Length: 200
Image (tube, one colour):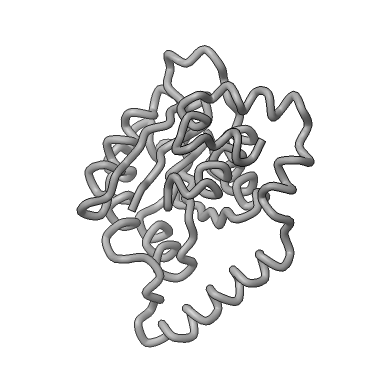
């Protein structure tokens, strides 16, 4: 499993803390890749721009899962869920993270980084990452309802595939100025055999 960490520039000061928490609790053998945004980066990225970069990371299959966030965490979750192929949960608490992993089995999670959650709550962040990665994703919860929950999750994913355009078509419809800004995120664009050439 490859896990990407990337959050909005407004919360760049917390990037290392997020990366450390994910690295500490990621499943054994998982690779955790830090895509920033870091305080030393000159370009600043909004949660909207980061959500598209999350989509690129997942569509390119360079990562299997993304941990992201912004000040509230909600804006990033909403933006990510507007990108084809991204199913992003919102995890202000360990319980929310665990239930998302077990019931919804998505490929991204957004955490609120501008609240007490991480300003003074590093322990909560760590416990949230611990709960998120505590068991293999998609087992269903509660166990007595697992079969029904798994069926519902597959129906949700099918509905999203039917209701959304392809990632390539999505990228082609974005404003040129937005695409040019996204291309400047070199650590994402340089992945694999050329993420940017695959989609842009």
